[in-house]
Image (cartoon, rainbow, N blue to C red; front, side, top):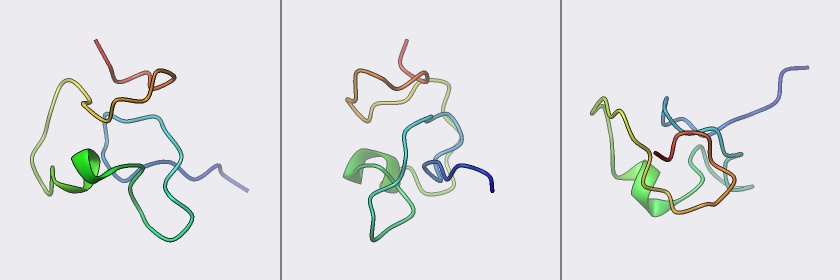
Length: 48
């Protein structure tokens, strides 16, 4: 089984238990393509 991850493509964090995103920041991206993730989680590989 593949590990679930945040629906924001640049984010590597797991989603909240009741959602598709790890944070409100990622959820607010909608269909916007970003190069940097602003979720604020230290372990996120999308933060530059």
